[in-house]
Each structure stands twice: as C-alpha cells, then as structure tokens.
Length: 88
Image (cartoon, one colour):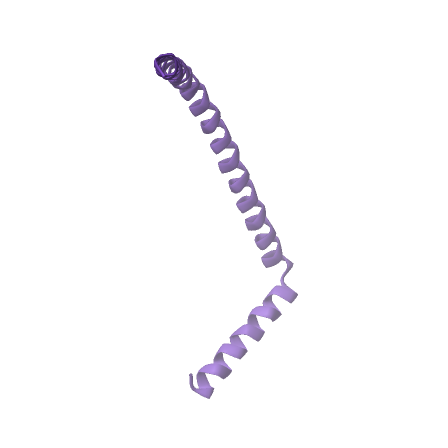
C-alpha cells in the first residue's frame, strides 16, 4: 500500500470518527440498527424454537412409532437370546 493510500485511509477514518462524535443521529442510527439486529436474532431464535417444537410434535408421533418398533425389536432379541440360552 502506498503512503498516499494510507494517508487517505487515515483521513477517512478521522472523518468517520469526527462524524460519529459530532452527529448523535449516526449513533442513534447505529443503536437502532443494533436493536434491529438483536430483535431479528431474537425473532429467528423464537421462530427456530417454535419450529423445533412443531418438529418435536411431529417427530413425537414418529418417535412413538420408533419406540414401539424398538421395543418390539428388543423383545425379539430378548426372545432369541433366551432361546439361545435355553439351547446352551
């Protein structure tokens, strides 16, 4: 980077700092943007939570079915284990 570019960058930075110091409007804008961001993040989190809840409601039915299947499987395996044990 040339010194010229560096100086221009520095002056731009200074100008930006001056602007933020002198103009409380920009700071307000910043804070409102920050608030909007946090609100958006919160909303997305809430939406995600709601979606997750919906998913769990949906998957609860599927899980119940899975549980039944799993129980049946374990019962079957228990039966086969018992048969093997009785054989041995």
